[in-house]
Amino acid sequence: MRRVVVQCVVSVSFFAAVLGLALSNTSAQSGTDVVLYAAEAPVKSGWNVVADSTAAGGARLANPNLGAPKLVDALASPSSYFEMTFNAQAGTAYRLWIRGKAENNDWANDSVFVQFSGSTDGSGASIYRIGTTSATTINLEDCSGCGLSGWGWQDNGWGVGVMGPLIRFASSGSQTIRVQVREDGLSIDQIVLSPQTYISISPGALKNDTTILPKSGGSPPPPGASNVVIWASDVPSATIWGSWSKVFDASAAGQTALRNPDAGAPKLSSPLANPTSYFDMTFSAQSGIPYRLWMRAKAQNDSPYNDSWFVQFSGSVDATGASVFRIGSTSGTVINLEDCAGCGLSGWGWQDNGWGVGVLGPLIYFQTTGTQTLRVQAREDGMSIDQIVFSPAQYLNAAPGALRDDTVILPSTIGTPPPPPANQDDVLISLAEQNQ
Image 1 (tube, rainbow, N blue to C red):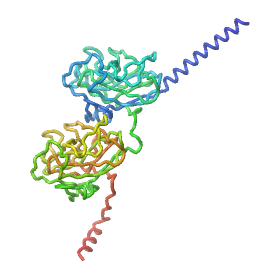
Image 2: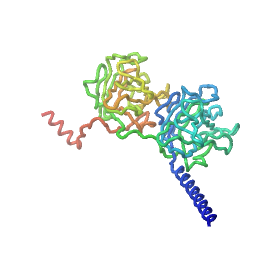
Image 3: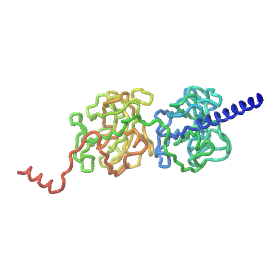
Image 4: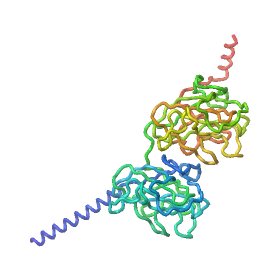
């Protein structure tokens, strides 16, 4: 009997262990896929957002090919990297994938180091940590001589059909991923950490891929972070100085544009700390949120000599929190309506503070939440402006409208314009009354 009891106890213990392992595995697999769009990285240095209709969200994050030598190890304090945050579960094994494309499909432009804030190996030991020289490597080309072609998905394994080490985290909650350059010349649009769906298979093809996954698992902007849309008619006349003035324009938002006429003034190399010709406007924004700045403008006579201006702010900072583009300084972000030398201009067009076809400029951050002041100074005279947009999401990677001959008018978030007359008779009556 004792032997039977012992055997029963052993059997119960065995099944309890099996059940516990099963529950543990179920728990470990309870995490969901994390899909990040690289172009939305709030922290980046040496990487540029580039508009790309083939990329997730219409933009990719690119590190230009400057012919830098390939690094052997990751850097503890890199100068070229980007970071994003996401949520993950402790103890869950995640497969890491990125979708990238190498400049000119060159194998010398196809690899990065990836690090995390709280990553561990299977035994729980720290590994691939930010601030160290330990990192997992992703080579877009699957093997030496395999070749590259357009977008492709790759994990951190090297070799045809070889998968790399899984990624785990020491604690549940917010994690940071850092991607730093190993070889320059790579663009990235999607990053995936998958505990189930893509644990054993790739999200897409290794070459000429067209797979775009829905974004998930990232840290969304806090509630209340929404588009700011300012019309020229919203700007108080008391904050308009020098050669700037409000003018009637039937094609403008609210039929009003802010115009700085062409007087043949020379182009300025930098904004003035104490300008005599400018306009100011106040609006509300949130601290720590990256905003994309867009403005709709048109150049007098569609001339490339009438198409640029400086923009400054009362409390703007860069991604690290350092003051930048401040009113009262000679630091300003520049908007050139023409997208490149020789690209041409035609009527109204939307432009951000980047220079070059498809190149997006630096994002705008603010030091504190609340009222901000925007200042616009002419760099070249001869332009008109009717709309200014700050977007934390909707237009973060894509313009509100066209670069030429645009007709998009967004609703102002600042004021409500007076309603137009109901019909032509109302206009005639109004004019008749004025003539009495």
